[in-house]
Amino acid sequence: MADKTVLDWIALVLVIVGGINWGLVSLLNFNLVEVIFRIPVLTKIVYTLVGLSGLYMIYYLKKE
Image (cartoon, rainbow, N blue to C red; front, side, top):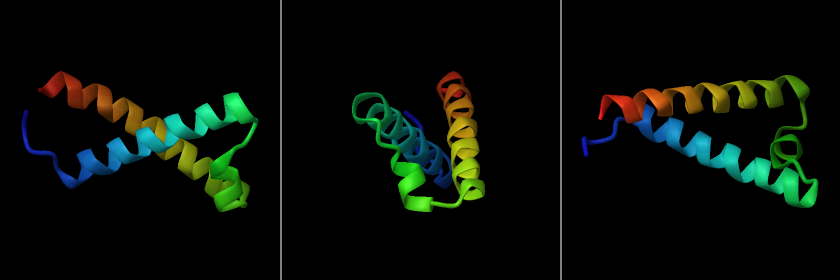
């Protein structure tokens, strides 16, 4: 496995955070991202970054 770059780590952390958040939403009806950021624009930015990170992870897996 190749060494991970900073971008790889950021994307991985965002995907993990997104997964945990959706698990909390599903199980407890608790949206941690909305609680932390409170401003709808910031929440939307975080969700966009999580989505882009998911796409990047697909690329990351294919480049291995």
